[in-house]
Length: 520
Image 1: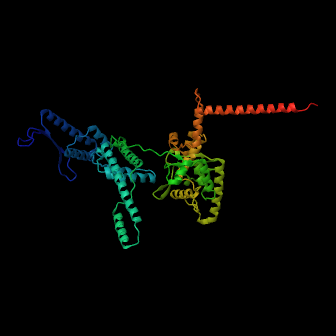
Image 2: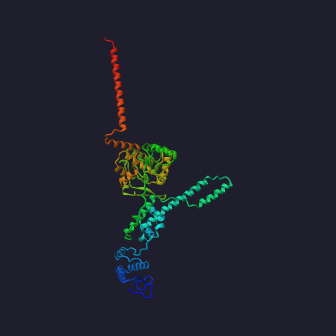
Image 3: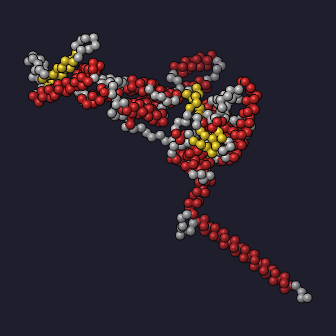
């Protein structure tokens, strides 16, 4: 510690200087700090000097590598004029092999975290999309240890602003395309105008999708998982992603295709909700329509037992026990882009045994007989996958193609549209409407919690709701008489009166006939 010369700009203040181990190339380096301008500050300077020497003392037990790390850390702290790091925290980081210099960026950590993930390919792709398109471009430059909740709030605000810009640009491009479609092709002037408009459209940004509320929550979840692992590795002590606030996502409720909704759809082509469910009659009509379809058994199984698309495509015969009227869901086919791979169910609750009714068992038996005939017909060209539902040659069904096929079949049937996944909604609705306990329904569907079943899949069919309302009303005794009750009593009274009058007329008629009858 020293006093500077009187000619110094900071005349009258104290400064500290500590020699540090040389750099790898042999050049000298030191830690220096000035601005201690009072006796009390001078005492603080001495404390800082003792703090620095305590940090350097940590390297005595860690060898040359630890000494180099601590020296580099102190050099950075001195250059940035930041507070001296805690001795015990530095000791812990040194022992656990962590970086002492906090220059690791969010982007570098996300890359390191993703490289270390050992999950299925589709999950990695989702993480990679969130990181490449959203997290790294917007917050990747921030130092990991200095990431704050405010940075994340600013990121999601920027995403919302970008959404507004995308919607405006999409609207402009759509209007230009519609205007171009309305221009006649005949005539020199028209052709020249079309050429100018096409050039203008080509210069516009392409149609793009906005980053919706569900995607924003997924981005937050990806970052939160990555930062939690950083905490687990003792790189961070705080996760800002756990504290940033986003608008909740309202999941669309499933609605039943009532007659009124079907009529409205036929007039406008609009669905009342993204999630629609057929009535039992509509489901029956669709199943009957598919009677001759090669994959009839798969549609039947999804409609009645609620298997997911990937589970149905990936169901093996080895886990399908028709003698015991059950199948075990233990695998699924999943898409990664357009590539298909086999995978285990996402959660423990996805592994489950599904009971089969007699009709479904018979449907599957007929399907197996047909598959055996196909195998014999294809001969050596048959691809033996062991799957219950396959392409004509026995190879895997592509889940994306199954969805496309389902949409074409629904359109051909003339029924109001639903998604393939909505057949699963319908299966849950039918079970609940039949009075099956919600726990059994939840287990059949592979849900981890019965609340998921109630919140998402419990679409009440109109008659079921009416019956429940009437049953509830009858439980409450009321002193007042309702209009309906008065009407029923009046009708009963009128009916009883009419019966009494009819009996009286008959009796009078018999008496009259008896008086006219001659004596023997």
